[in-house]
Image 1 (tube, rainbow, N blue to C red):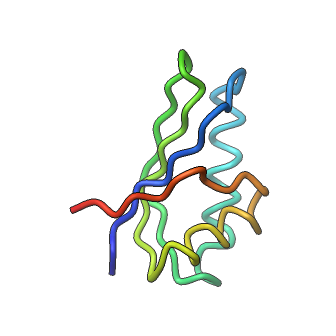
Image 2 (tube, rainbow, N blue to C red):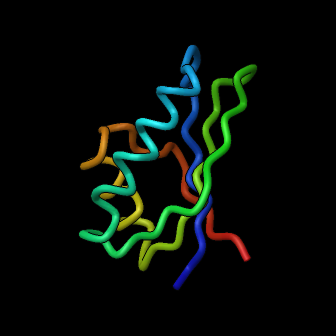
Length: 80
């Protein structure tokens, strides 16, 4: 299954708790979309979140975020 890096831009002002909650919400719905979220990072200075996940398609990765909390990625990059 492809490994993707989701990039969410302009997400300034988030707390560690906000990020944990959003990740938890992703985990709660990921199976419905065939997605497996692995890890996330947040660059507070730029307001950018990076999410590493396995997904059958970019559309599935986006749909998981949309259902979980509505914050869809600005970009999804397949990584190796």
